[in-house]
Length: 340
Image (cartoon, rainbow, N blue to C red):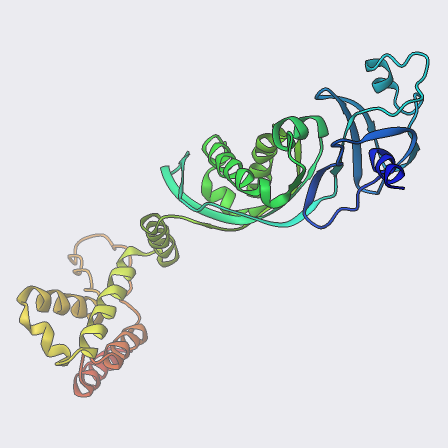
């Protein structure tokens, strides 16, 4: 009985693989065992089985059930010179590959990646997002990743893939014909540009990128600050109005500090600047000098600033504490007295 058990263990008549989530490749155990002529091979959906002879790939089987003989193993038959068929068991490495899409994977740049942008020059950025891939070329995957290992899983290759993705990002953005801001404004375009380069990187291992998307891209703080300032200036538009706004903001901040506006009196220059800004905001534009009586009729003088707009400015200064209620009332009365 012991001899029968021994012989049974030595000959393989059923070859199959039930994979688990994250499995990429599995080498069927063959140590001290041989495949029996007429053995049954089962390849499940999403799998590929490959027979190897002395490290060289021979026959590949897609999903289905097979009886192993000279008809179903034509390449292996040729390699082993089974021109007249075979009856005895044979040795061969059998490796199963999962070609299912590996989803919900994350990529990121642990260190900032330096890229040369056509608009900003050399910049350093961080980015992260998600991707998915599948085994496409089993021969390349076997030669570069699997080798002689018994089982290969996603976590075994992820560190290498993330490094390749970081390299792909630097290459794609550095050589892109699109400015970074144009890409950032269109995340789909950026994802497509990066995916094309990452696909090249992963193809060397027989892998195919199925999906690639970006969740976030961040620039260095100084570059982001510059962009924020530039955006603010575009929104403000009128530099003169922006200067007045900045002055009013400074006055408000000083009024909120301990000592109120008295703190501004510590510096004569600051006081002079405040007085100048307030005068510019409150005083109406000077009317042009009248033309001599003998001169030809001149063009109509430029209209003074709208008195109601001046009153609104005064009210803002009153609100932030830059002037007193008495000063506001007196100036308001003076402006209204000029309204005809």
